[in-house]
Image 1: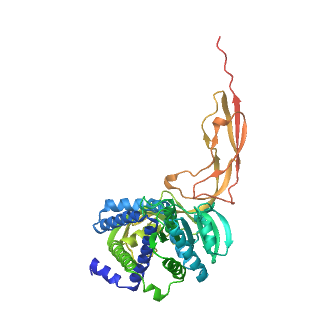
Image 2: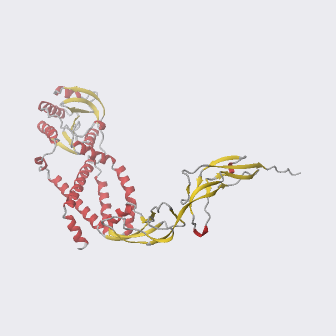
Image 3: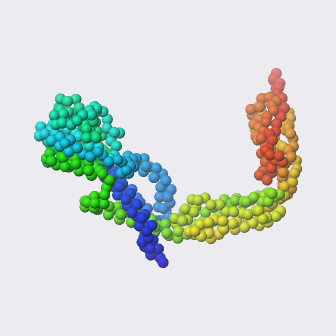
Length: 483
């Protein structure tokens, strides 16, 4: 079975279908959010970069692959920073799906608002009315005056009267009541509206892009009424159309039913189909790249197991070896990231110098095959522990000041009882030393407490290591003055 047949067989599995559907749904919501926020052009650039990387992987362009693999972690952090508003918007959208239903619309209130806005349009008096959706809008608003009043046509007309202090702001309707007026809305950051539209239009579009609220606007210059929802502007040509738009908004945010899902318009259907197609292409490119069988060599540390209680590993040892593995690209990369190590088993070995095999059998991977290691075996020397006494040597660093002379150095205790191997490589003398004593800071005779530093094969006869005292006898040197 070649690579293409393998990918096609994997594509027909239920896991691949579920994977593609989840990725496609994510792309669909991401696209809708970016389009509404006006930042969809960035998504095209990112998609082009991923497509380029996929083609490079299929063509085995190792240089391009290396660049993408090493830049990808930094790129993810950069994308999180760049798309922070969009990611926050997507999370708010997901949470809003589980939000409680809004109160049912008040037919009397809806009629009052529709009639009031239509009359304001005929008088060419500007107005902004906001009906929140499921998503919170409080953090997008600023200013305003509390109202908490029952609606009436004269009240709405008076709020947006040019002589009213809050007529330039928006009126917020929640729980079938007029709760605030004179509220400032966020200005749109996209280029959806032409420059001919004023601040009121850009404010209505700004809130419609940032939330799922319905914003109704009356143009002061044109006398027209428009509805802003999900980043789009719709002209309303009658009081009845205003009322219908409000009712549609309030009933359309209920939890989606199967019947409602079947009413998706052609544009939404094309977006969903495009998202699924993009997810399928992405999955095929990724699968064909990751299923490619490769062979790779890399360096691993060697882990020496503990020998029996009366033996210790002494002398020089090999610390690492190169391991050769083969398998699908994704499996090999995952295997390397797990940080495996090679084993040398000392538990069954006896005293003396002998050859030990580097074990790879303990490395468990269903998708990666171990071809071998270089070297495949190492020489180790084991020796028995014996109780002995070793002298403690002071570790002196630097020199005394110019007018000082070191007369005598002594360590208390001068010797320490230890457990050490009776065998040493090439007859090398075992020794233990103190932690460094820096002479350049010594001005007079001193007594300094130090820790013990010992090779790993030397252990204290009684744990832990005891501290020792380094005694320095220092004299001041007097220089004769020249005549």
